[in-house]
Amino acid sequence: MKVKVLYFARLRELFNLESEVLEFPGEQVYAAAVIDFLRKRGEPWATELGLDAGNRMAVNQTLAGIVTPVKDGDEVAIFPPVTGG
Amino acid sequence: MKILVSESDFDAGTEISALHAGQPRVGAVASFVGLVRDLNEGSDVTTLTLEHYPAMTAKSLQAIVDEAAKRWLLLDVTVIHRVGRLLPMDRIVFVGVASMHRSDAFVACEFIMDYLKTRAPFWKKEGTPDGNRWVEARLSDEKAADRWHPVDVAAAE
Image (cartoon, rainbow over all chains, first blue to last red; front, side, top):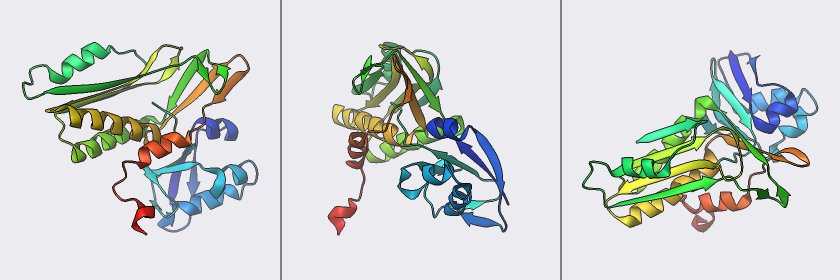
C-alpha cells in the first residue's frame, strides 16, 4: 500500500520536504506505523516525531491520532500545533 | 454559509450586512475580527506569513461551523481567514454569526474562534528584526477550546 505524507510549517522546513510517498506491506496500518517508519530514519526525524514532541497528525484532512487506520491511497499530514486566527 | 480562505482583505461591514440581508428572522449578528499585532513575545513583528494546508483548511472550518450549528440556533455563518504575507494592523480573520437572539450569536462566534485557533490548519511565521520565527501554539488557546468539549474527562472520573 502507498501513502502520501505531507509536512507543514516548521517540520516542512526542518525536513526540507513538502511531501513524499511511502510504501507499506499489507492493506492497512495504524498511523503510528507511519510515524515509527519515519523516526527510524534518525535525526532530526527521531526527535521531531517523538511522542512528546507535540506535533499533530491528520489522515485524509481530518485530525487523527496514532491509532487512526491508514489505507492505500490515504493522505497523512504531520504538522506542529496550529496557530491560525 | 460562507467559508473563504483567501490572500485578499475583507470588509467586515459588507460581511455583516450580507449575514442579515433579506432575512427578517435575524435578530442578532455577532462578529469577530482578528488583526496582526506589531508585538509578540517581546519582539517587534514586521511581517506575518500564514501557511495553511489547502486540502484540509475549508474542510476543517466547515466541520467547526457544523459543530456550532448543532449546539446553537444559527441562521447564517461567515468565516474568512487570510493566508500569505500580512503586515501589522492587517485583518487576519473574520467570524460572523447571525441568529434570532444575541446569546446564540455571541456564544457561537466565540466557540468558532476558539476551535479555529486549535483545529484549523494554519501556521503563522513572524518576521522580526532578529529574523523569522514560527509562532508557538499557546496553552491558553488550548484551554479556551477545552471549555467547549461536551464531556470533561477529568470531571467524569
